[in-house]
Image 1 (cartoon, rainbow, N blue to C red):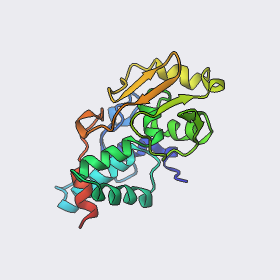
Image 2 (cartoon, rainbow, N blue to C red):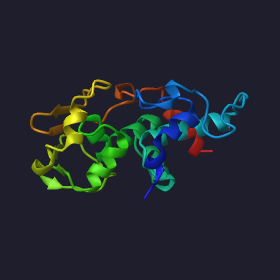
Image 3 (tube, rainbow, N blue to C red):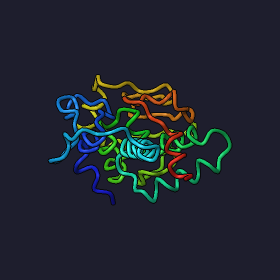
Image 4 (tube, rainbow, N blue to C red):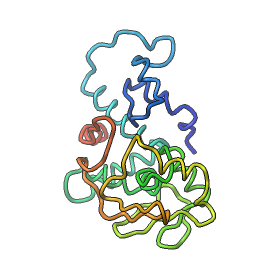
Length: 205
C-alpha cells in the first residue's frame, strides 16, 4: 500500500502547483519545492522532463496509485479505441475512490481511498472495499446507512471549495451518487492543467 498520503502536500510543493486547489496547500505561501535545495533556480526542462512532470502531476493527483497500477491504466488506455489521453483520464475518473471524492462524500482523494477500504461504500447495493474498482455508467454508489452521520461525510458535503461535476448525480440527503457517464478531459474539474497526452508519450518512449 502506498504511503503517499502521509506527505500529500509534498506533491504540491515538489510540482510547484496546488494540484487539488485546496486552501491549506503550502504552495499558496511558498512556490518552491521542499527540502534544502527547493529554492534552486531551475533551467528549462527537457522533453523527457516535461513528460515526467506531467506523469507525476496526474499520478499524484489521484494520490494512492502505484507505478505498476498507473502503467496498467496506460496499457488499457492505448488498447481502447479513441484518444489514448482521454481514455486514460476516463479510466482514472472511473476509480471508485475518485467517484467518492468527486461526489463530495469525503474531503480529499486520500480520505476517499481510506473510506472505501474501510467498507463504508456500496455499489448497486453491494459492499465494495477496493478503491481501484472501476465504476460503470449507471452504477449507483452509496454510503452505508451506518456511516452516513460520520463527521467527515457531513463536513465534506458542506465544502465550498469544489462542486460536484455533471457526470455524477449526487444526492447528499440520501448519501447516494450515480455515475452517469465517463467524462472527457474537459469535463473533469482539475484545479490545474493536466496533460494526459504527455503521459502517453512518456510511457510510449
